[in-house]
Image (tube, rainbow, N blue to C red; front, side):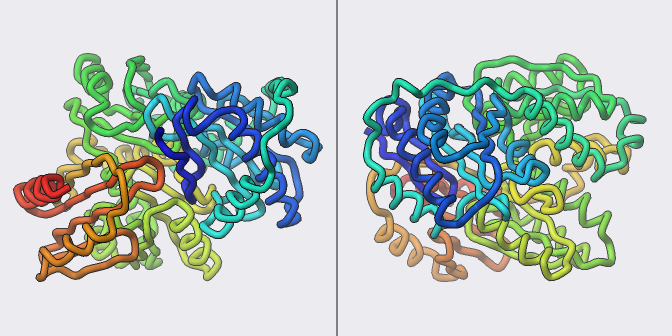
Length: 453
């Protein structure tokens, strides 16, 4: 049986095995206790992605939370970025999204957010939540686990406010003047409504692509969108994961460019717009070094963190608190602009990418071809046990590299090549990433590590 994964990325499990209504009830009760310990005030926002198991898990959460929380706002099916954004205008004390984000369909889980920071839980908070989960015990009766009616007014209001603020970050008239033709593959996920509303208001002609695919918008899962972009003559394609915090791009030739380039292009746009202000760009240790080169070119400051949204969020909050211009994200297609929310946001990323194209009057393919050239390879390998000894052995095989153990194992080389190996926070897999100016080096390095595993 696959284990329940509990980390600062949330709680995730396979439905019917490590995750069921009883687990959901216990986490709901634990989260209420965590909020009480922190004396967090305000309503609790609740939402879910489009997985079939979502309504039953949400109902169990509600059954646990109702007795202690007088004001629960059920936003229904809603993308994580919109829920997280809405915490500020709704003055929420907490939020829970029933989602397993990019994990495969058999998974589900929960992302927990606490006010007033309005971020996902950090490591200490996650450990405390799990301690409380173990203390509460099982419910005696789940018969009362019936969902609240969806508060559609709150949900619609949240979407409108989110889209309004995303549009305020860009030159909407400039984007409208381009009348972009956009293919959209939301994966049947919860981020569809905000993204489609943004594109409508930006004057885009939209071709929706409905294909069955895994949630993760990685290149191998975007064949349907790529074909639609080619066949229908779109300017670009946009793809989300199931909870709408990641954005992947397909260029006008129908080529998926890889999620890392979503962040690279957005960072380039924001660096250009903040020229002379020495902006700080925050990225994690497994994100493309295209970002590093762009930061150097534009006179910014690069700040690196371990993988995990909360690590980036905390670094960005600190920098903004110091009066710095700061933004960043992860190489999974997750852009974070802290003035809007301290979390990944595909809606904001879409607005920034379209504005970047409009400002440069360039195709997406042209913009990507002008970026520094690196070759990035990502794979994941099933993980069945501890890997510390393997990582130590692996480190010894690269004597000319600079070793970092801040997050698994990362080895850098003088020509900017690097390789990273770390256990996933969200799945029982080991993630292997290599990048280099040489495609051969990246491919051979990943193949060598996979063979040893």
